[in-house]
Image 1 (cartoon, rainbow, N blue to C red):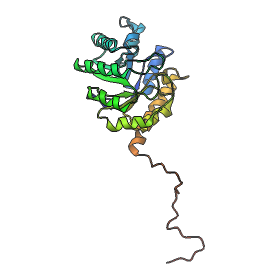
Image 2: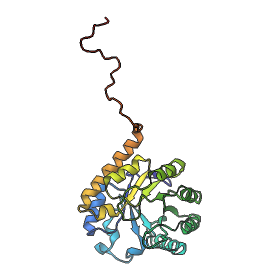
Image 3: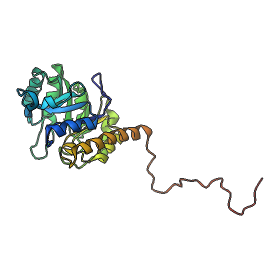
Amino acid sequence: MIIAGRTFTSRLVVGTGKYPSHEIMKAAHEASGTEMVTVAVRRVDLSARGTASLLSWIDRDRIFILPNTAACYTAEDAIRTARLAREAGLSHWIKLEVIGDERSLYPDNEALLEATRVLVKEGFVVLPYTSDDPIVCRKLEDAGAAAVMPLGAPIGSGLGIQNPNNLLMIKDQARVPVIVDAGVGTASDAAIAMELGADGVLMNTAIAQASDPVGMATAMKHAVIAGRLAFLAGRIPKKPHATASSPTAGLVTPGAPSRS
């Protein structure tokens, strides 16, 4: 998976919130094989040192940190948070979130576009979290987004992929990577996203709040790989009737005289 010229061998992006402990988070990251994790700028104590710091539990030699603007409800707030992340030395990459509704956590796409345009002009590599709207995704790409990140379902819902046709349309038109973000609940959801042609999947709650986060991280790793391989292999067409797996054409009926 190549984003803004940077190559990732893993197509699974993982979050850092909601884990029972930092130790479990670190183990889950290792089990997932991820090479990029998201960190909510507004929820991390950038002044903390040693094991008190969330950042100390991330293997930064192997894992790339993608700051995000979680909990921002205006373009101005998201832009300010992105600038803070860069000034704090986290990254000039940003997972851009501008939330439009506190209950659904759906994005405010108008504000998202505004913030994307500003941050791209300032030299940020912008990965916006957006609704699964092909038109909005196209506008974000035109605004300079390095990837588009349409939701599979509301954040933390675990509902899985709700609008597969929308994701197909988004992928069909996209000239940048498409990463399905939010809504994944279990491994089969991740596999479906990848089978639809997504370039990657981002998840947090599905792993962090599983009964066994490390086990679920392992499952997600294999699901993403399997889904990608299935997409590349090409599934058979769906048909409303049966097709024999062992065709009868050319078979000799028992007892029938030989034509030799």
